[in-house]
Image 1: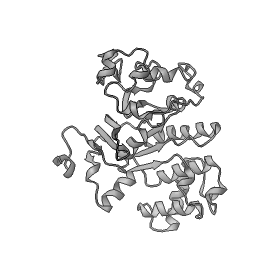
Image 2: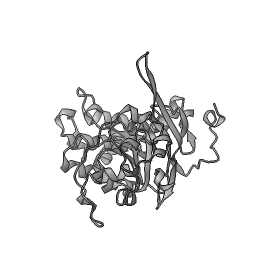
Image 3: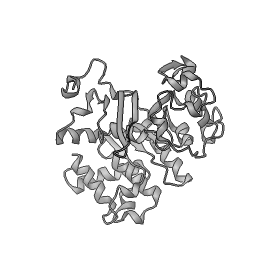
Image 4: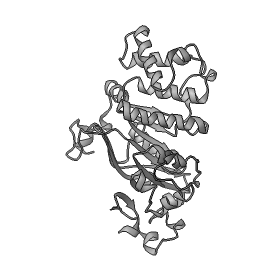
Length: 339
């Protein structure tokens, strides 16, 4: 293994000004039975960065099975890449081994998951988790000190300690418990929140409240958000940049107004047709959630472009050769049409 993965030395291509720097990251899995096993590239050669000095909402969008959650697990260090690497503040996450290093990493990178009720034990009061988070991450030495920090975090999400005190998860609405999950993530003062489908289990009225909260955290608290979703409506509404994933690959990435406003890749164009056209000055018109097709393993293992079998513009080259990402009209697009 390269020294850049075993030392704490920053690579020449990685800057400490980048909070996250993902370089050619890949992750493969073996699927099938002992008679027929196939290597599935759940994440294939993905590169992007988020800069510390400019907080943003970076969206990873894709259908179920596109690899976006696997990519999030690489960022969170739940999985190690089988190719390439993930750097946090200039340091390879592969080198995070000790308990102290992991604790420091998690104080700066906090997750918010899809189902908020899985975050909290139903037999334990919600505020106990919040107190523990403040104390365990060194924000407070005791419950009295923690109470002020917990209340402040809850007020950032439109709640208060008084509202959640002595309540169990089942005594709170889905919107309240999800906002409490975000408050819990805020307590360590993170630089990055990774939100994996955070609005998929709440109703439409609360969905906008939560995504507006992410914008507020970016603008007022300087927190960057990696927002993972299959809902292009909320993605268009809140994102600064967006990456469209298909079968483990990013097929188009750039400013959200370009990628979703004027998509170049045939797959992104197909997705755009699933939602109402946005008005240039009113992103709230994209308020409808869309559903995307289910994945097929054969598209993951295809030699050429993963979208070739469904693409109306596919050529023989598309079937035989996987395209490289190229710059076109202010974004990156992985398509032979722009070679």
